[in-house]
Length: 434
Length: 162
Image (cartoon, rainbow over all chains, first blue to last red; front, side, top):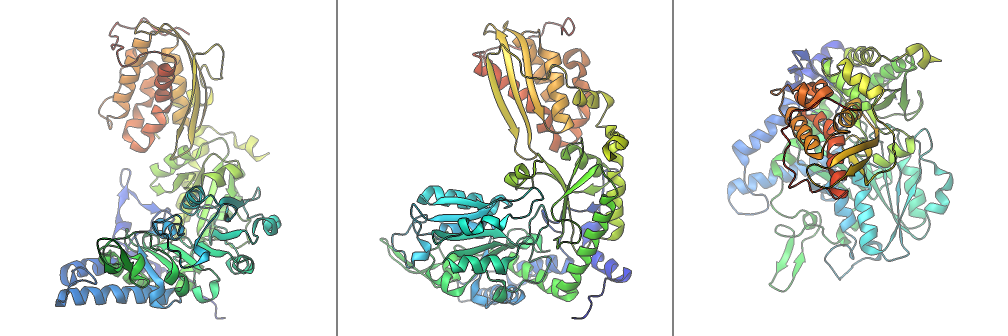
């Protein structure tokens, strides 16, 4: 495999130049150091232009109407679907556009016949009964936890979870007891939004399929940062958000195996997704339209396709390598500061673009405030992963998350600002170091 | 960092009247869901009207320095005073905290609470500063105090008793 070339200074400057918001200053004229792309990423001009161009030139309601504008809008929307599908190695009709990943995960949860408004289940895999089990993990973002809690409550199925160990890694030692023929769904994250840990999707999926369970993967922190090919990943469904991959807000993606999308009941119903409608009952269109109710967010889908093309123009492998180098730079600097405890995989283990840490004696909210004062934007709290934080024994953490437009200088700015925390809060660093 | 005045750090490192004590009339547990600040708070009140006296406020506050300091200031300011005065102080704190930097706060009304005036310029921290106070009013209600009919007490304060 050829070595991936790091960005030259010129290349990184050109990349940053594509993002107008990066010229912003904050807090008394300080340059913005944005290290919160795990929450939402910024959007390059080609994405903004694509969405605007749709509204200015091709705007119409998709899949409706026989006039020229409607044809153009529909073509644009379906071309966007094909672009996104190709990006993840899928056929176009296996890509469903949603509002975001949270809606995509809810779509799968509500596809269970006895959780959604249908009494005509086409496939036993989408029926849950008391005694059936749903398996998740303790490290899940709430979007891949709460819908399964609700599904269990509605259907009488039992929710179980793979625990994390004290370092935040999945404790797979008891998996054989947790993943059994009673398990109908195993839902887990590809890359943790807190720990950055990368879970072994193929292995876990193989074990799930061996007992007949469906595999649902939260890919929000993987698709934007590393190459994902659903043909080899092993999952039955993946969900990701457009806004975390340089795309617009308001568009997300559910990928699902065609034969599963075919038999799943829809989640949202209404216009667009129907085949035949009478007053008494309706039948539904084939997938993916069956699970895309209402006028679609076509402009946002077009924007997401532009984001995919932008990513491809830079190269996902180069993006991945660039972010990994920034993570390493930060981990090395933090290792030098014994009053900072990084959570998640040890240095050298595979890591996604998130680095969450605890400062001894200072609450994350206060750490974030000092960083914000220096123009450094991070996230603080439990990052929508509250059970994970309880398992880690940390009420809250501070999280820096990287994207393609971040630089080594920004890592240094974060560390410099972090060094102000012990000063502001009067930490005894000598005692902390012992 | 203007926000973290020495007084705030002092209150957060050594919160006044901290700990859970008996007797108490009601105990509440409040959480700030966005960041995980939490407070368990008890009140000991004599009487139920506007002239009811707050004999004790005891609490355990876990979270950011703003939430802990604010709970400490709360306890300092209301213990030994009437419910009417306590609610006046609460209203003054809330007005300052939600003023986006326009209201500096009056030390004769809110005492050390003026140290938290910087919070009003950081909307994301206002809930941290209000956490203890909203827990306190919740505990008053659960103690049987009718705070809806309690009139704001405009009697000048005599100073803080401890």
